[in-house]
Length: 501
Image 1 (cartoon, helix red, strand yellow):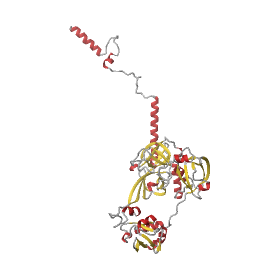
Image 2 (spheres, rainbow, N blue to C red):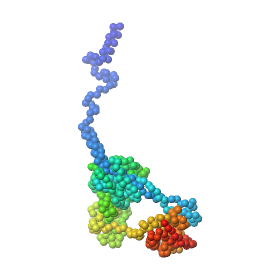
Image 3 (tube, rainbow, N blue to C red):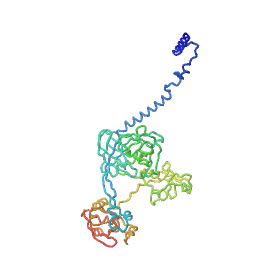
Image 4 (cartoon, one colour):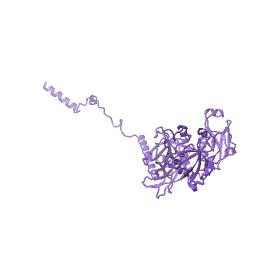
């Protein structure tokens, strides 16, 4: 028995050492311990040729983004502005703007708000250098009302910026700095971009200098957003946040194809939709600002509106695309060309017109004197008209001395406005024309003279006034003397008041 036990132990030892007879079935070890051997050709971790190519493409795209940023970022600037901001002060009296207010606080707030207080406010935005001479493109809303503009470059240099020109209607502004070896960024052609193309945004969101985000062009030709008067925005999902305004939107070749301007947001931050002004529009506006200091826009002379399904059906159209002419101004370019109310403008110089906002942009960007072709639908029938675009008229100012006169009134501490029939009825005045005091600054000469909102000004420097024009004309002599004689009244009494600055 002992001999038999030794033989069994020997056989088990040989089994464990893997020394079995040739007749032993292979794979017993594997079956016993459930270990699967993998041959080199099965499930190999080696990369296939296709995946290698995909990885190479991804790496090349990544390097392309990095190259664009490396080249363009030095020309992107951080803009700091300091501006004077006015803020309305609450009424100094608990029961209205002055004691024993029998008109009621709601009425006085409606017609006679308090003169706002002034304070300094700092803001920030972005921009990009487009010429070695130091011209910088940015948004108008970044530098509007700025008392001081500071421009900071990526290399640490800081310059004082000068506003060359601003255009609130397109939200474009041009700055200039004086420096040497200034980096620049090339401008592309925004008309050639396609929806789905890669784009790169560089700016200073929340003051975080030279932040880079990447996305695609989500849409083109966005208008009717109410952001600017002339809209033809590029929509992108590249992250844009406060502080990005005025920065460049670049294509994959490193060319600027747009100026980042606005975001759609319900929270104040990025929500996936941003808007950029096409660089072709920026160039047209900037060229005029540099050469003329202002922008001269085209004018058609029509009142237009968007089409609704009901209006489209009424005018015999199958779609709601186009701009419906509601009124043609007499003597305007549209009038001379034979345009009529009820016409629907569906094409402008070969370009389709989607809505009234798009037509307004097309006309505004056309140089005055240019003759264009309008494609219209009149009573459902197609028709073409040739029209020579005019210059957009500007409203005349009340007086050439108005700014100095307003400054004089500001020093005295009061403001005025035209008396309307509605206001006269509320105030209890029998006259229906004139000038009333609309606001008085606390602690000013006007306040010490006990002037208050609601007083009717009958005379200025012994001249009767029945309108704002009369008021300003009579006030001109006060610019030389530094004082003004007023005859004011309320519902019961008249009195003379002399104010000096």
